[in-house]
Length: 187
Image 1 (tube, rainbow, N blue to C red):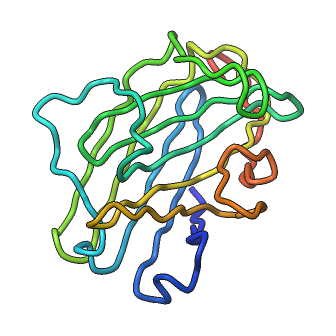
Image 2 (tube, rainbow, N blue to C red; image 1 turned 180 degrees about the vertical axis):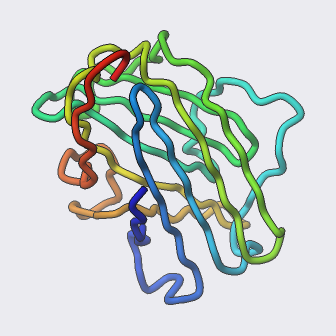
Image 3 (cartoon, rainbow, N blue to C red; image 1 turned 90 degrees about the vertical axis):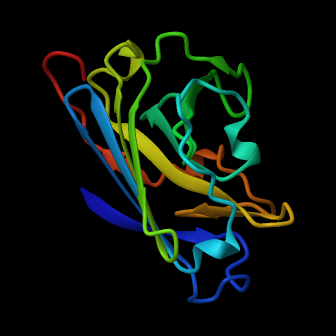
């Protein structure tokens, strides 16, 4: 798994005080992700783990770690949302911000969050992409992103790349990580 540094849309807001790194890999039909947030966690609203994690909508309205992924050379893509509470969702889009709908074939990801409560949070997950057969046998382009909510409600937007005047994780230029095609069962 290669490690990538995510940058805040407004890099002057946090300076070197906060770091967010992400890793992504795929093995057969499984996408593996790891997010590492380092810095004073009191700067952000980090919800406690829920007693029962479920599929939920609009997770991006609070602290949320995300991945956007698409088969290379297509307009369709998927958005994965992961809350530190353990809640999750997967959406499918036909093209840039159009045709958004829940991906009915998505299987609940295996999600684990560890934190020291002070300066370190690590979120890891594996997502079985097997049911999303459109990705099978294709190179996959990925955008690694996060929304971090601060006390008071302000949000910061983190990504590998910011290619617009406003934060926009859906722009295909931000799908900067390429995972090679895999063959065999599943992906």
